[in-house]
Figure 1 (cartoon, rainbow, N blue to C red):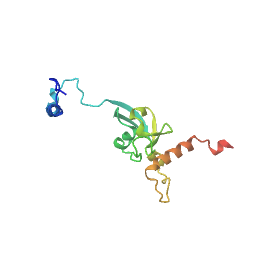
Figure 2: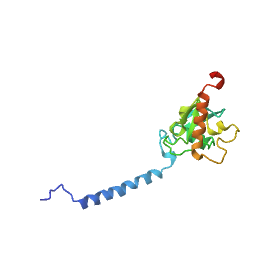
Figure 3: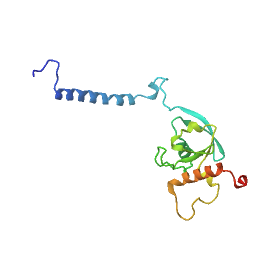
Figure 4: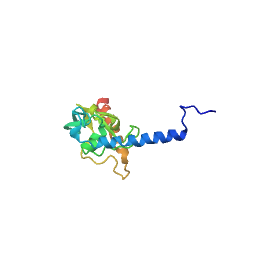
Length: 165
């Protein structure tokens, strides 16, 4: 097989692309050294955010939330309600369950924006000063918000004993 004029060997290709990669890796360093004042006004340094109003455990909150925040992140990181656990972060385990307008939802799979104008009840709001759901020392751990939330939603949805008579 004869070598054509346009053909290059693997070695030549690797050497050539290596030089390009080294040169390209220096470009972000140069861009990073620019002062913020040198950037055009159209470049936004922030993430899109929205003002929302949400009632959490009976208390109204008006907040500026980033559009990417989940409801679990809002409750835990920004309102300090750490009873809502983040277990799988995919809406499979139920540790993040809260009541949104009385219905159980996975707060890790719901954006905080979607709670605008709605009522959220967390495991802290369901306790209302009462003893824990399990008091024998059988701690449910991260499943407790799920158990408490689902039980509360079913009890609230069921007709009362008086209504059945």
